[in-house]
Length: 359
Image 1: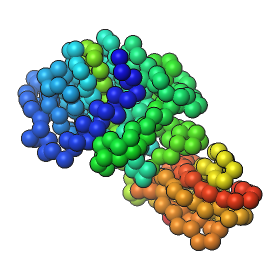
Image 2: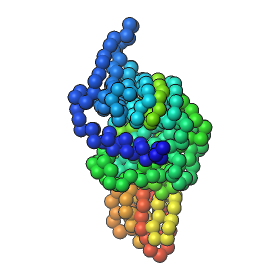
Image 3: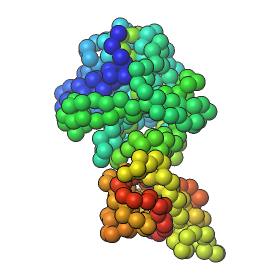
Image 4: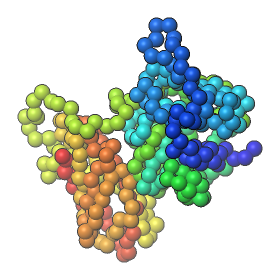
C-alpha cells in the first residue's frame, strides 16, 4: 500500500484541478422531498463544490459511482462508499476561521478511512488535517513526529509532509501538509482550531490566511458510511465584523497596557542562531468586544521579520507594526487570538517590547 500521508495531497491535486469547473456542470444532483422536511435533500455523486443550506461543501471521488454524499439541512451530510479508490466529502466554510468547530454523528469504516477537519491556508500555502478518527491505517505513518498538543480531551501528535510541484488551490506549487492526529479516536465533539494553529506555529510550522475548511469524511481503498452534522462553536461561520451592542459602557476603564483595551505577549517559539519563530498572543482586556487590534513590536537589536501569518505587518527600523487579519480582528471580552512570524537576526536576540491598541 502506498503511504496514505501522500494520498490526501495527491487526491487534493485533482480537487484543485477541478475547482474552476461550474458545480452544476460537474455534479449529478438528485433532489427529493422528504415528508415534513422544510427543504429537499441533495445527493451528489460527481465532483463538485458549492454552497448548501448555508454551508460550503466539497465532494470528490477518483472514480464516479463508488461514493455519494447526501446533504440535508444546515451542516448535516451523509456519505456512503463501496470499494472506493479514493474519495473525500464534507461540509464547512469558505473561508474557514480559527473559531471552534463542533460536530456529531456516526462514522463507520471498513479499511483505510479518515474523519478530519481539513483545510487550506494561503501566504503561506498550507494543506492541513486535524484527524479525529481513522480506520486500519494511521495517516501519519511514515512522517516524522514534531511534537504534540493536548486539546479537547486528548493528545494530538503533530506531523509535516511535503508536496513538490503539485497542483493546489493556487495552481502547481510546492507546499507542506500539516497533520494533527488524535490518539484517543472519537466521532463527535469540539475541535478548538486555534489550539492547533498555535501548536503548529510553536513547532515552527507557519500557517497563513485560512481558505476553506470542511469536516471531511475520506475513504481510500475501503468501504463505509457516515452521517455528520457540523457547526461552529462560535455561533457563526465567520467572525463578526462589528462588536455586539452593549447596554451600557463600562463604568471604569478596562485593564490594558497603555489604556488600549488589549495586551500582547511575545514568546520565542524556536531559535536556530540566525533566525527564530515568534508567537504573539493578543488578549482583549476590556469588558466589551473589540473589532480590531494593532500590535507594535519594538526589538532591541537588528531583528527583521521575513514572513508573518494571521495578520499583516510593516517594519520600520526595529519596530514591526502588525494589524489583525480579516478573520481574527473581532475578539470578545476576555478572549484572545494570536499571530506568528519568522525573523532573521545577528548578534543577540532579545525579546521585543509588545504593545497593543484596540479598535
